[in-house]
Image 1 (tube, rainbow, N blue to C red):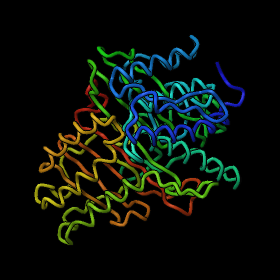
Image 2 (tube, one colour):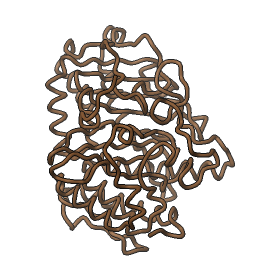
Image 3 (tube, rainbow, N blue to C red):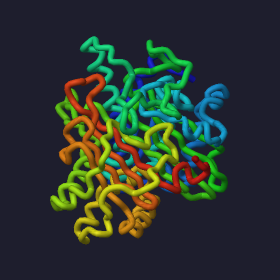
Image 4 (cartoon, rainbow, N blue to C red):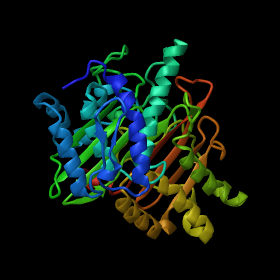
Amino acid sequence: MTSTTPHRRWRVLLGAALAVGMMTACGSNDDSGDEATPATSATIKSYDKSVAGVVEAAEAFLATLDDTEKTSVQLDLTQANAIAWSNLPCGSTCRPGIEFGNLDDSQVAAGKSVLLTALGTGTGTGFERVAQIFLADDYLGSVQASSGTSAGPGGGMSGGPGGGMSGGPGGAMPSGGSMSGGTGGLGGYDAGNYYMAFLGTPSSTGTWQLHFGGHHLAVNLTYKAGAVAGASPFFVGVEPTSWSDSAGTTHEPLQDMKAAMLAMTTGLSTAEQTKAKLSQSFSDVLLGPGEDGQFPATKQGLAVGALTDAQKKLVLAAIKPWVANADDATATALMSTYESELDKTYIGWSGTTGLTKHADYVRIDGPSVWVEFVCQNGVVLQNQIHYHTIYRDHTRDYGGEFTFA
């Protein structure tokens, strides 16, 4: 079932999504967190905050789809499907799944309920952060439309030293789309251009993945035998870094991530900052789309084991905003692991430590955890910088289901 005005209807649902996220963050894990949008009867709800609850939400979403729509959502758990994600607004040319902007109100609400159930409940993290990224893309689209610019769905330069456009697996834009945009191709900047897929059959006993993303967002949660086996890769970026809506509310979806990284690097002495400085410069995250398993063979920067207890706490605090995208119990377990490995973790930076200029970059690299934060020149708002970030895990990406050379 589809809507004749899907993207307008999607925007109506965004406010309700944020409201539900805030109520869930305040402790509601049951139907008391249900919220119907003012203009529709569609309800976004959190099921039980467990794998069984996520499965229930996924099955409820599937039940809203017809047979053709289900074929876009229910896919095999293969390496090719799992790694098909991008930071670009490249629609279905670079990722599997069904476009939320083409669904009706009840279907969108059911899909958002999957996210609300699966993601973390912290203020500004988890589901709330994802909802803010939707709003950012809608704002970006409105700015581009009002200015008459045609910057194109770029999203920034790629991953490591040297540049090149990032995109789908392998660093190249998958074929099949056209630069003119439209459903199924390069969708442009819009809150409806996000895609959901289930890789494998949602189950509390088997192995499957919740795969969701669009421009500046890639959520990959892997479930195995009733537990979360991996909460990464998780890519999140934003352009602009902050804006005010028509009600005068200021939005800064990644400000907590930036602030945590700044606290970590400014908490170092001058000598420690010198030791942590990386020899290379980076115009984008190193381990973005298509760079699975390509962790540097040698740790670089400053060993966290040499820091004071207070400085180590700042490193942990810098990791947490990314890990908190996962459900709260999973995030707590992962943070415990990363804390136990802290002395073997390294931090590094390049550019400047202010995180205000193009190619300002910070990295955390542990035996397990990997986090990157980088500033880039804007694509639509070219007089501003914007942010790209990535969270990976050396052994838990995609639940450890695949081996990368």
